Length: 453
Image 1 (cartoon, one colour):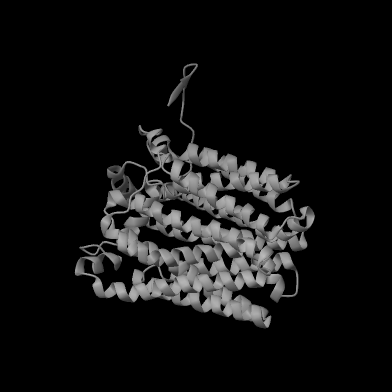
Image 2 (cartoon, rainbow, N blue to C red):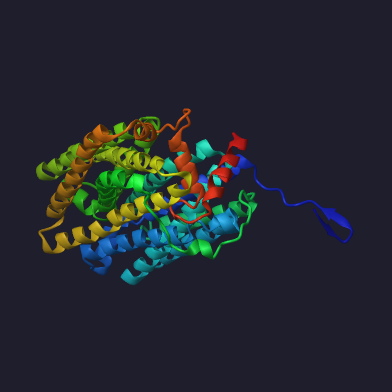
């Protein structure tokens, strides 16, 4: 309460838990939609400004680098200054990114916009992920798992439709996203804060991570599939439209967006379906699906079959969702609560290296090694070999596990507690991948979300 000229003025009304939860989930969805929106437009940009596929992959790759830097540096900042200012600031940067996209007149503008997008997304996901878990932990954990893939799918398909059938193809999608971000910023102003301020904001900006001794072996075993699934996503996001044009006749922009939509939508559905499965089973499903899906896709390129191409992409999408989820749930429960966010940081370093760097290599193969089909064969073969290596390791490692490790990687802790839920809750609450954040505070504050169940 405040007093103005003798009158008692009540505090401003804030949104309740579920509107705030929905708003934050929408931030993740539309940030990732914005990240995938340029994919159907890369061919248009390339024709307009006459740059090579290597440039396309660099434009794509700088986003991954910017996301990773933001995650590692400011991922836990909201634990110290609150969720609302961090989310609001990231929305402002994301809005600036789409403004740059809408007015882009060359490659430097595209690079600038992608860097801004990456910084905004990497800053937002920690605060938003933790904010949703503050409100309701179980629902927040599920939303954190599903929303990124769902947003990527929506952005790719929506942008493809607008490019194919709406006016101003290189601007309209960004104008729509700008309007959405403005509305979200207003919503953040109306949202109640869910995290108390705490000292140590500057200290939290230091990049630190560790791999506990008990998790080093399992991390090495799951690293190949983590690299494989994110490398595949990077290929579809950068060179997917060019590949689709080789096997499908029709509207190139729409079909290019449809390929990325198919991959990520199937990944999101797989996360939902397999959320209660044992991590080792999930890993095995993911690696087998990844090998089969990529093999079908390469076969489709050889015979020129559109139906086979999208079937292979859908199966690979199952591998994308199951492979990454299984990898995270295999490794993270082996760490103590105060080690989890640091270990998850290492997982995401591996992920974003796979997401960004191999696409640049693929672009070089397109230009100097014989075209997009040859790049797809080389890339697909590498992905399948990595997945096969991970699949073999799941069978070999099961023989060496003791009872304690078996229990940990099954997703259950002693007494029946669900470790997977605690992993996601603690990691997101600590700053979603940053590896900073005061560890003892993480578990305590995460449990506050249970009050809203």
